[in-house]
Image 1 (cartoon, rainbow, N blue to C red):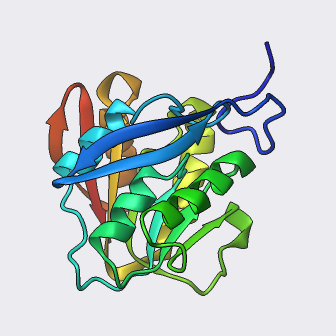
Image 2: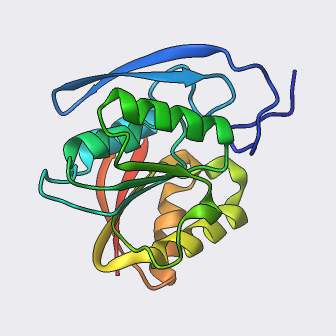
Length: 201
C-alpha cells in the first residue's frame, strides 16, 4: 500500500498503464490511463454525466477553455475535439495525470492546443470563456472552496462554468455556497445521483 491519492503531486507508486474507452456525442475515445490518477480504470460516472448533460462547446468556440482537475484528460480531450479552434488548459496537481493528459491530447489530434500544466503554471492574465470540472470533492470542503475561489474568478465576463457534483457528496450545499459567494447558479441537470451546475457571473 502507498500513501498516493489522485491529488498527490508526484505519485510514487508504479504506473500500471491501461486504456479507458468511452463515447461522447457520437465520437469514440480510447485514452491512456494509469494507476495513481483519478478514476484510472474507467470514465468516472460523474464525468460521464457532465459530458452527456452539459452542452459541449460549439465548433466555432475559440476559448481559452479550462478543465480543473483533468485526471488523465477525458474532459480536456472531449472539449478539444468539440471545439477544434480552442485552446484547452488542463490543470492538475498530479504530475502523472498531466503527462497522461498531454499524451491523450496527441491521441485526439489536439497536442498543439492543450496545455497540461500545474495550477501555478497558468498565466495570471488568462481568462476562460468556459470552465469545466468534476471537482476533487475528497480533498475536503475548505480545500474545495479555496480551489473554486481561485479559478471561478478567472471566468470571462460572459463565460460559463460547468460543474458536476454527487448529491450525496454535497452537490446541493455546494450550489448554495456558490450562490452565497455571489455566483449565478442553476441546476442544469440531475442524473444518477449527480448534479450538473451551470455557474455564471
